[in-house]
Image (cartoon, rainbow, N blue to C red):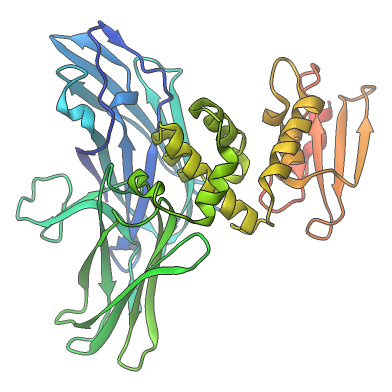
Length: 453
């Protein structure tokens, strides 16, 4: 079974003004993407995919006294093992406004689609293309897990900008007697979505048995900043849970929302977590925190210089952090965001060892000096990226051109008990491309020698 749910709008910032016949924004197109998996049948789960766009970042053309634009989505879903394609479709999302002062410029354009899928592990790849300016595009690739809920369990969490009771079954976001409007940006705060609504489904509970539902919010250091509990006595075996969080007093940063279900004996029988982001610029001036203190290192940098620094830090940032930062336009906001980012990096996170900001930027500088090629900054090359992430290699095997294309093998003996990276000058113009590595999470291709021919 396949179901496509139509589009709707959500709140966002920054209206534009123009009287041109065609509008092409200077800023890059931004795709926001999220998903949640729910119970469906005994053989399959139900995957909902949520898409979000900022109308101010879409190209428009004046047609019949209205500005019209289109985002074309190319959606690909494959099995994680074997790469079998299960979904490969493209569809257009038209956006039309009266002019660039239209109220809809103050909303996020949201669309969602749902699919019945067999239980398993998948890779979801989405490419968004601005149809009037095809060179303007953005893409995201996410791992997706569709699991059976045969025992007592909690579904994936859907973070929303609004949830309300309704009997309007025609509404594109209607489900379980409610209008459930997702927020695929996962960004909340006073400037956008001040209240975070949390939608979850609870499965296979015992009727009229006492349960406790506990919600917790933790920060980037896994420190609990909010916690609440409520007793539950379910009258049905499968139920819906809706929680709300006022985010206006939470400092800007990255957080995790945890929902935990325990039985009368205090035993954990269901758990779900979700990452979200908060942007509250009104709190930044008053806060004295490690993030604020780190932000003082960035004093004197312009908004453009701060953006350039964060762009170079993309190798250690998450996709969602990159999306969130793109929404922060003021120098003060970027300084505070970047300050908190470096605090987390210097503390170690996402399985990476701690790295000081000064060390990272020093490696960027060295990468630019060593690996710049054909007008491309060194930090943007494959060798530059590997050097920035892992530092100086312990040994480099250099194989100049001869009977094969030039290539290099970098050895790191202190990483994962010894790993290697293989770079080949495939074009013959001096840009060495990574073709193989034994490092977990990096590109692995045991037949890389074919690139030497």
